[in-house]
Image (cartoon, rainbow, N blue to C red; front, side, top):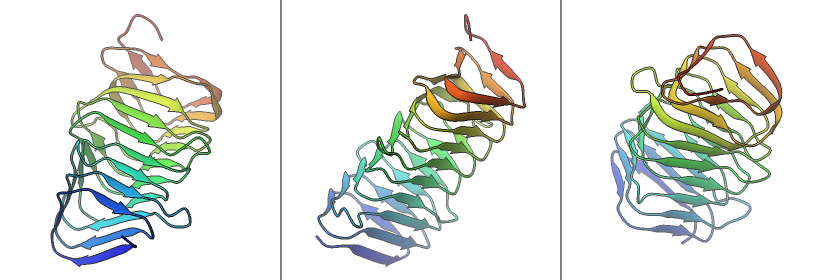
Length: 212
């Protein structure tokens, strides 16, 4: 199908969405739910933009494989167990995110920035691959429910602006930018591994693992 733009109250996408042309733009005053895989194929477009007034739910079956960027910019919260992969484009959540299953976000080798602008919670693993893009945690992470193991597979700069609580944090490959910490970083059961070109540590790090 070509690009799709829908505007209304509640939307449930219970089957596969495959757009060979254009983008997907959902503007809902209520809830939005994805139960099937979403694919966009247009190199010059392929964006998914979701403006949700109610809860946005992405189930484990609602993985997204996108040629363009992913943007959630509504006032509603997000409940997600779905992976999102873009082709060197940004992945942005502007409201509170709760992980309900293991999640992997990948913005490509030439990387778009991965951004969590609000709270992030959920006792689940989180894998982040931003390539040459950045990773930004703007809000408190794990303040209500600590995250499981968080792995940064690739990124330029990593910024943690507020308190961050998870089972562990592992920057698995060397970042080309600066790892900046401005809030208490707590690894409840594992270690903290920082692997960056430069570090700017302005808050404490607490790790319960064997080393850090």
